[in-house]
Image 1 (cartoon, rainbow, N blue to C red):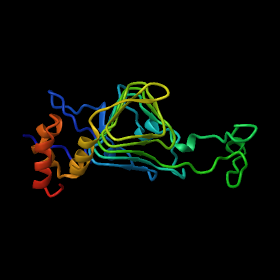
Image 2: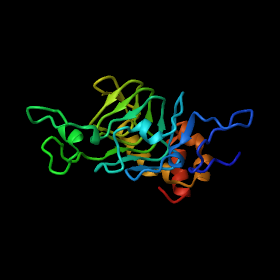
Image 3: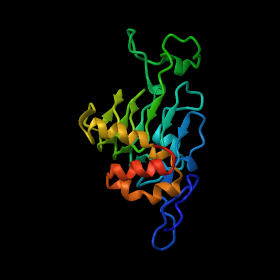
Length: 220
């Protein structure tokens, strides 16, 4: 089996002609931003790859923003996904939502500025479908699948399938016992060689084999 690319590889997919597939990137390799925290092997794809992936994916997360975007390991982010972080919020408890402070550039203590919002946290092995929007402060559990075009906020439990606008959980991918046992394996934290060696157990949903592998690598 060929060596798996390191998480610091910008273009981890190699085409049959030997050229890198520039539409897909490992995010850790292309984003250097103080408000992003990115796990190993999480990738994004775009039909029109941007020069600035951080801005394309989270256009309102600035270097001076008080909130963070935390993305776990092995996440899969499709074309045109956007993370609408808390820095995009306006106050909505007053008579106007207008952000006067942005234009007179006196931010500290400005009445029109909202308070800091909470971090957005995406778990491990989360698949976010094409054109989805993740809203400020959202928390997506491990193994969540977000359908194409969904608009998702709030808390999404592990291994849930969420679709629509507003996003709603339509089903759980596995029963609660399986989810609990699967999360105990923490396969996303294994060395990459061990993950590749047990790819069949992971992708074929062979829980017994996965738990045996977890014990083998000291994670179960």
